[in-house]
Every structure is written in structure tokens, then in C-alpha cells.
Amino acid sequence: MSDKRQFVRTPFACRIKIQHESIGELMVKTRDISDGGVFVILDPDKVPPIGSIVTGQVQGMPGEAPVLDMEVVRAEPDGVGLKFLSEE
Image: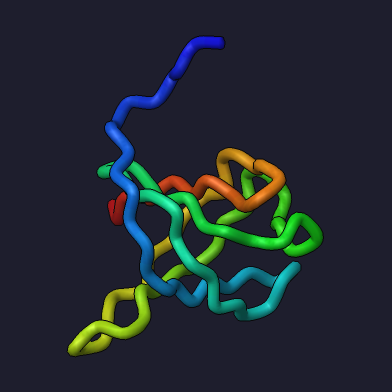
């Protein structure tokens, strides 16, 4: 199995609030992060379909973190891989 990742992943745990019409608003924890995206731990029954756009906001920062758009690009039994979408 080849690894097609463009960016190096770094273990990183924080809380993120994610939102999508199929799951509502959830507080989840991250497993790792890279320049291209983040993996969040999520129950399998709460996973939005691949290709869905969710919003996410890091919680617990000294100030209010920006709300980012992310695409669901991978689903695993313990969560989903989210790709950061650039603001163009």
C-alpha cells in the first residue's frame, strides 16, 4: 500500500468544533495534523459522506480561532481525515 500523502503528519491533540448538516455541531479531538489537513476522532455513525464540506474551529485558544472549511477525504473506523480548503 503506497502512501499518497503530500504533507508530513504530526501527532497533535486539541479540541475542534465541527459542523455539518448531517451531524449537526460536534466537539471532537484531533489525532494528528499536517499543512494539508487534520484527522479527527469521530464515531463511525457520525461520519459525513466523503466529499462533504464541514466547518471547523479550534477550541480553547486565548482568542477566538477562525472558522475553516474542510473537505472529508478519508474515513476510518476511528474518525475522518479532513483536508483544509484554501480561501480563494
